[in-house]
Structure formats: C-alpha cells, structure tokens
Image 1 (spheres, one colour):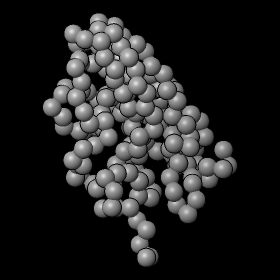
Image 2 (tube, rainbow, N blue to C red):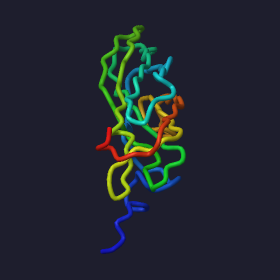
Image 3 (cartoon, rainbow, N blue to C red):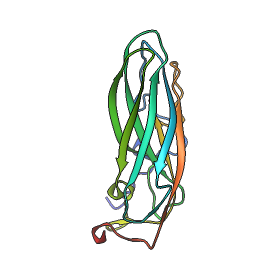
Length: 161
C-alpha cells in the first residue's frame, strides 16, 4: 500500500458528505442554549495555548446533561487536515432554569498538523462550541457557536515549543 491519505476513508475527511450518525448524535429530554463563546487571546503566538469559555443554560422543563463539544477548523492549512477536529468535550449536568460557565484550554499540540513530523502553522482558525458537530442536522434543536482566532509567528516543529 502506497497511498496513506485519509481522504475518502474516514468521516473526518469525506469533504461535504455528512456521516449518517455523527459524533454527538442523539436526543435529549430538555433543551440547552449556548452563549458568550469567548476566546482569549484572539491572536496568539505559535506555541501558546488558547483559553476558551462558554455559557451553557438549560432552557427546558427538566434537569438534564449536555455533552459540550469543542471543534477546531484550520482555515488554510498547508497539508490535508480534517474538516474539523474534536479538541475537547465535557459532560455537564445543568438543572432546569440554570446556567453554568465552562472553561477549556486548546493546546498548541491540538493545533499541530502532520507533514513528516508534527508541526505548528500560523494562520486563521475557527473554534466551534456546542452540543454537536458543526453543520449537523438533527431532529432535536441544538446550536453551535463559532469564533475566529489567529496564530502568529513562523511555522515550526511542535517539539521546538
């Protein structure tokens, strides 16, 4: 076997074709609302980590649990990468009528791309936060927030950070 590319072989590289049951697929007995997705800093050095916070509220009639998912998208990578990459998730119990603020870290390692070795690239990125994958069509209402950030500096091997 000489072609080790993942394009067309796994749902992460199918392009615009959506998987039948994507990660996060399912129904809930209640509804949730996401708001205030904050990335800090919005421009970061190549080896730095990104701090993320988002507010999750239970707007339904029952107490419930939600799996909050964070996905990363490279806007103009130099090598093939997934459409989006799951970089964090957390199951959170939220009583009806309450909100909770969640904090995450997206590390430099999670932004690394493979090109004969793991390396970091500067550029623009989009981070998605929600109860499902970006662009997923479901029967249960769910929202996915997005925010942009950029990475500055020269491309470098991950081990150089």
